[in-house]
Amino acid sequence: MKSALASLATAAAIGLGLLTLGGCSSTTTMTYLPSGDTGFAINCSGSDASSSWAECYKRAGEVCGNYGYDVVSKDVDNGATAGGSVGGIFGANVKNRSMVIHCKQ
Image (cartoon, rainbow, N blue to C red; front, side, top):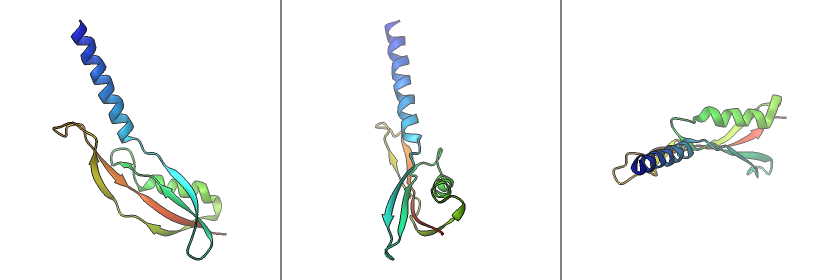
């Protein structure tokens, strides 16, 4: 009985860890562009299974509203395995996705 509870607790902890790794946390920060205008740096990095560039574009639309926006710069989809065990069984491929936008007026 004790080992069954320990196995269940271990499985729950692993599942929670995978959910945490797979989540996409989008952040938006106001920044200054080389022209002196203000823009926004949007970071929507995460694992491939739960995030994509669509999250960045969605966030840009929310920030600029009906005015629209221009993409000033955009990172490439570079990724690396994060987390996991010795055998790499529970690793996640985390992609770095960020872009800088300028809202149209």
